[in-house]
Length: 442
Image (cartoon, rainbow, N blue to C red; front, top):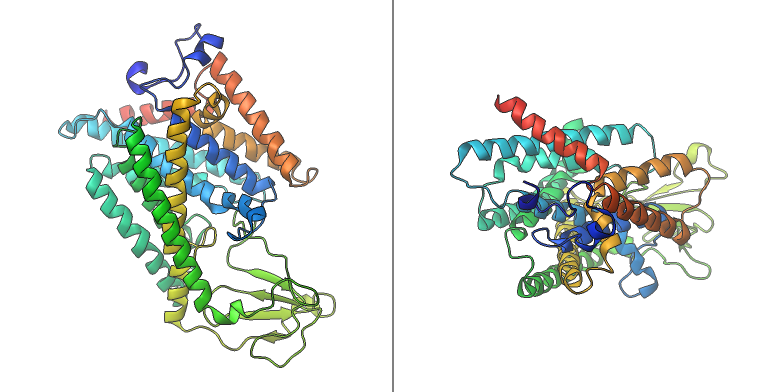
């Protein structure tokens, strides 16, 4: 029934202003919708907002929080949503459990297909939906698990997943399509699964309680600090990379793009370093690529004089296998898949969720546009990708582009909720999930 599932809109014909007035009221948890809306806005910022690299000591770069963390917030909230959808299930009812798990599989397949369609548009961003759909299928067998067991498997995935991925990568066993999809794509499956299982555990809590929100905020802060410390430790241990000149007069100027949504993670281009650490060579005017990790592998070239950008100098101090594993595990840059990223970005996601739960309780009316956007994230995300496909060659990324797309999508979502209700793609996915469960059981 619609009431039991917490549909945020009234029955057909009783929408409009009245529908918005009741939007997000119990049993629906509006704070979760707000968190999804924040994730959508954050991903738009990562794609078109021109957010810089995040440097905690420089407040002007804090918009870089959108890189990587928005997608992990999606993963966490997706787990919460699964828990809310299945909160009334009786684990002892085998038929109900089977139908619910099959519905999640159907939902995942529908999202996967939508992801394939969006990928065919050849936009410059990494589409998350195929991995997102695969995760719904992956978590289906765990729907009936207790909160403790979910937290245990989340912790194991968050620690052992990056270690296994780093080990495979360091031993040059990362060429297969399956391994690439699971461990080495922009959206690492173990990382997302860890956050999704954590979200399922969080969703078992009393999310309308201020005490629960306070505990989530405290836990998130502790995890964020722990992840930041791990990332700083990894940076300090990577001495050759850290020794590269930073941007200043007469030395290197950073021109890297840290968002793995628009460029492969792991490379950092530095134009014109005066000298390469360990090399008595003047590299003024050259372009160097540096790669995170001990040994600080660096390749320098002059793009104007050297055919095909052939390297002029390669740093011979390549890292050992163990050093590469250690560096990958400690990595915390966006989409690195390191333990520090899982812990730190997961903590940030928990903090955002906790704040959204509190704000939605006291500022419900003001947050309706953002919550409406979060109630149809699949539709909003798809519209954003289609917009990129149409306008990518004519609109330059920047704050104005980010604001325009975010505001227009919030207006669209608010009007849609007030006049129709559930988002079009959300409605399609829900119907597919129900059909898949019925057809498979019968």
